[in-house]
Length: 66
Image (cartoon, rainbow, N blue to C red; front, side):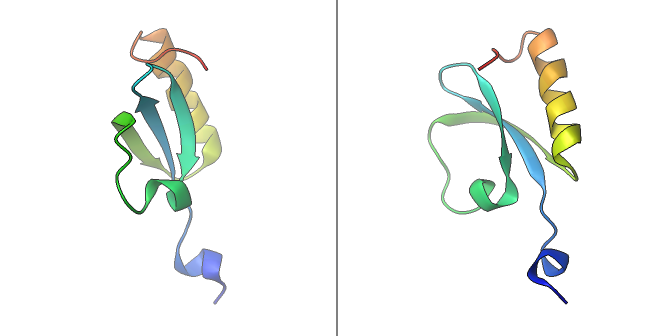
């Protein structure tokens, strides 16, 4: 079994203190909590789904574009 099959990669949309949202992978979402992240949505199974959710959050006024 490859490493990717053991730990499938998930994607998150995170809101930074500046108000902008970005997409990060499981690798960056794990570990110690980043105080700059004030909100987090996910996990999403693909980067494409995370991108679509980010667009929706921007349209809803919950996030600012980068």
